[in-house]
Image (cartoon, rainbow, N blue to C red):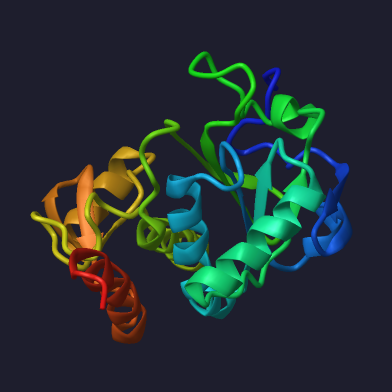
Length: 234
């Protein structure tokens, strides 16, 4: 049943928003592309500034995954523009993606971004929406903990691989402790299918079968995201 706020597996709600790149119609303006909509508590705050720089430095990585970025907070577009100018001037980083101005909080309330932690500032929400406008992942972080942007890249890539190969992605993939870089075959639906699984795939049991079907270049792409996240910034 649909909830009061959008849920995973539902279509992203249609809305027209004002951004630093002009008005956008969601999700229609991104038809055929994936997008990551992420909220931040406020402009001109330290944690949010570090996140925007991190997203901007990984913008091309998202583009390679056919994925666009959209920021949001309850600040005005005027505030966003000034903050973006400050980031470019002081930190030498240009913010290439649009940022939604939501001073009335209408979008934030519709998407469930205002939590008990603060009635006036959005939490650090992340909505990953696929090329058909369907919500595939929702993440929430508190006001005082910045996001790991490379993990968001990993999730986008993993979702795209599940669509392509019809397989599930294990924990810590592609460095899983049990099956390494393999992916999981969906459970059998019949007794005969369960018996066939043991002959057809590598299995711990008929309900836990796996195979190495993802190309090496895709695996290495994800590993580079994780390696970057584990190393000190230069």
